[in-house]
Image (cartoon, rainbow, N blue to C red):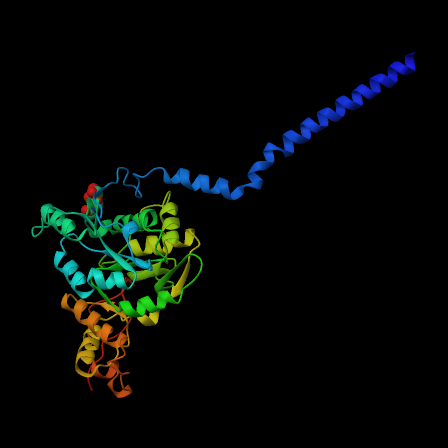
Length: 376
Ligand SMILES: *[C@@H]1O[C@H](CO)[C@@H](O)[C@H](O)[C@H]1NC(C)=O
């Protein structure tokens, strides 16, 4: 009798124990395991949660657009190669007109490129030549203006730069590439197009003029003087010149998302293509030999193109304050693209034939990259 009862109890406790064990195993391995099974989905959710706060742009807590382009990326009909964002001071309506003349919308579209201008609010205390109604008119004529609600000022360029990246990430991700360019830069759109057509890199990248180991300027007289409280390290991370760079909508999205929790810094190129790029683990691609640091060289290039059909040694450079350079350089590059140009003979190299006085430098904080050259 007694042993039977014991046997029964043993059986019950074995069953009960097994049941408990199953419950415990299920609890521990079952639902608790989910995060490891779907890590990528959780990550996406996390990123999307961070994205919810649409009104933040660094420390601008109620950021809005005053004007958005009526001609949207999604309505673009051609091959969607690149969306180009041109950083333009709100008062530079003449320079924007020069861009639209140099590369009219139809020619750009045929190349698979859609262009937008990034503006901000008129600084009413200093700007006397342009009114918001003029900007509204320009926008309704061309539909290519994105205007942020913050004052258009040198020390606010970081907002404008990030506004552009945020906007292309959210509205233009059907395009393969993003070109960011300043409004006073001339460039060979045909060469840039050929370069992009070949496919630059399959992952996230930024390609342009790469600057390494640049020292922070602590000389209060310099234009690039930066206080310790603004930036404490002695050198900047590797960054790209903001004159022109190529990236992708997905990189732009990563950069925008990683701007959360990053301290504001007024030198936009350094913050966005340096600090935040590094934080986002985005690689740089050197296109340094595409660039001339010198406006004089670009002028000589245009001269040689017109007179001798000589191809230019550089594809990107500053316009030296001359709006017409945009059109002339674009026309020249078109001729060369059509195979009508010759290679410049060595004895006619820019270094020998061009009087170059350096009055444009990279944001390299002091030393011009190219010294002046004199004839003879
Ligand atoms: C930058 O924009 C903000 C928002 O409009 C403004 O308060 C600030 O004064 C601007 N900064 C400069 C240097 O103008």
